[in-house]
Image (cartoon, rainbow, N blue to C red; front, side, top):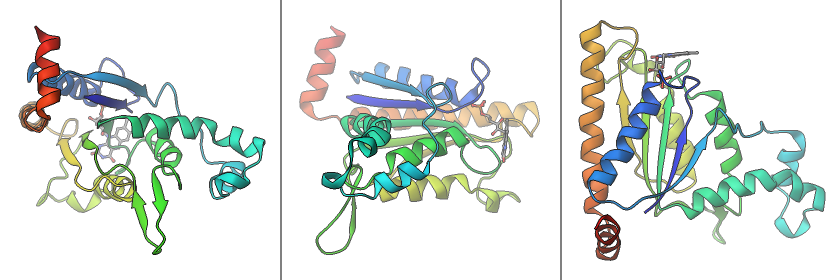
Length: 224
Ligand SMILES: Cc1cc2nc3c(=O)[nH]c(=O)nc-3n(C[C@H](O)[C@H](O)[C@H](O)COP(=O)(O)O)c2cc1C
């Protein structure tokens, strides 16, 4: 399984979302899933912000683009290619100010591309091109924003991710939200991490189950 793994926390060794995404990958391996991983850290290789040149080039039909426009779009084209080449997507990020880290938003702005990750159909619809991709979002939050908690209405991260990725074809992403990890006592934090680990175990088992017989055979050959 070709996996695109994206991390987005400003923290390194102390990052919970990074640790959880690594844990998920280990769990997939121990479930017998053979992985080919393409790794992107958007805090290191941060995609460029949208510029005027980008805004013009991206909506110019491909056959009308000048060499300068093509050069403007080249890095974004490459990010889209990495996304389209993958079978599965793992996105790990903290909640910052109720939504996504700005480096990840810059990534979203680079991968939402007409003619690449979505196309305009003849009957006037938009069709996302990531419909076959298994997708998990692993998010870490300082507060507890689960349904029924006082801060639940502040969660602007989940709907933003659903909208952006739904538009490019990811219809049913899985969310594993570790919360509360900061603004809570030690036992609530430990429980939150434990819950996230168990949820990731279940997602790994599900992905392993959904492997085609050919993929499963390849995985067992690689393991033996
Ligand atoms: C700049 C910044 C903004 C944050 N904003 C929020 C927030 O709006 N809501 C929340 O619940 N936690 C917020 N947090 C806490 C982080 O989401 C939390 O500590 C998370 O576990 C960090 O993930 P990481 O360990 O992968 O970096 C914020 C943290 C930082 C550094």
